[in-house]
Image (cartoon, rainbow, N blue to C red; front, side, top):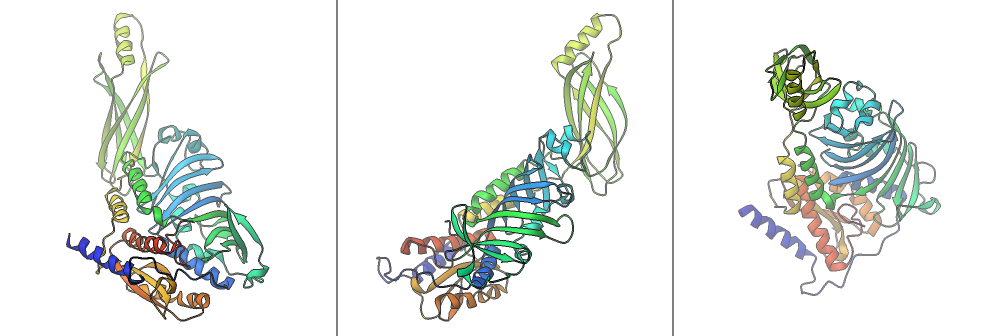
Length: 461
């Protein structure tokens, strides 16, 4: 409770720092957009991208094996991701949490995905599956890591420093200038703060599964959506209990039928964990009798330690079995029955608790002076009114000032005067820090009718 009070007082002070001293809005609103250097705008757009709490990417690429992959995903600064994808037109849901990729797709998706045996596909269809990045051919977390992605943009070429000679077009309703680079084309907004709207790259990365090509993605800052994004991540993570790990070895041994009577029948399968970590194992069996399917059953066992043997019992108790058994008892002759089964390792599911905590923090942030997430502002050195404010930002760690100070050159070239950076608050997690910054942006917008002139992060357009 004490921390909440301190956090509220700190933000209240900052929000009033640019006020006019009365209850009326200040007369000096944000300055008009300044002339810009395209090189500066290019550089600042990458800084803004790195500073976003979450970014949404929508587009396509070609994987190393030649597969066409489309992605519509929201990716957080920490690397979590959720959304939808397709591989050669076949759709799936995607989740990245704790640096691990999970996919959920239909039967056709798994049948056509290289590296998945046809016998495995029916079992994993429409279930969450832990998948190595090499299986998909795309490492989503690494490719869309905002610390690494700008390095893939290359360097502007030609007359890129002369904005008046750059071609202009419209992308998703936004007027943009085309900035050619030695790896492709960037599309920056014509209007301040000239944020990145789209990138088209010829290539990306040097090793599988980041060595993709023909990347064409629209880019949208999703920092203001972080509470909803973390709730979605938590909800999907909660679905992972029971997700399959088909790439951890489970050796199947002998099997036998047990306790087959009028109400039910069980199949017992001997198993050995041939992997290097403890695993739970799921068995799924489809039963048939007289040429007809009579039901299915599922069972779990474990965890089994590496090289440990065990057994799983799967019991069928369907009405079809009851009818088959009674008929077999009343009609002379042979009445064969059988089962087809698969045994597969289950993941140890991650906990959604931390993600839910981040969702709460994004909704009700609390300042913490000891935190390593720093909220800062950049302004004209001459004053602290709204007219002198340039942008708000968030940076991590004790070297946060390097992130802020690196932008002073662009600030000075934009407003033609000396700029300074100041810390406003700190907190313990990125969602809370971005939310605190978002409150400041919202208050500024309420007073002036617009975001600070260089505000890309947390300023929906």
